[in-house]
Amino acid sequence: METYRLPEATPFENHGRTVAGWTWAIGVCVGFLVAGIGLIVSPIMAWTGVALIVLANVVAFALHVTGRGQPTSLTQTAKGGDWYTN
Image (cartoon, rainbow, N blue to C red; front, side, top):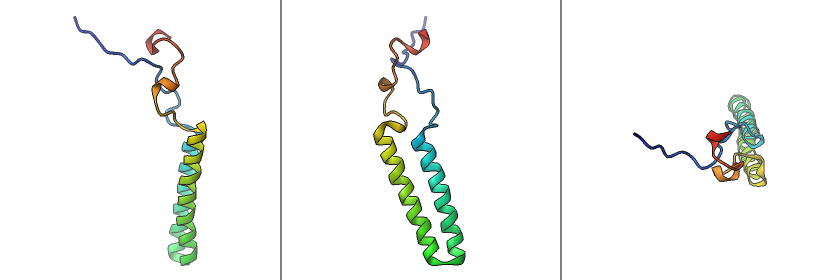
């Protein structure tokens, strides 16, 4: 008979769909779009796109630190008991 080692906490239920995650994804996409158009139109616009990418990273990290992102460990999401007893 096999024995299994099960997790001690509830797995994440958000699949990475957090405010910080969406902010980062949209911000980086807009930044790359602006930078890409800027490569054709103007160097200033290209550097503006790079600045938007950096800004998206900073804002997403700040949101993550304030609790609007993915938890760093399963114990932060534990609801008591094991995940398989719910």
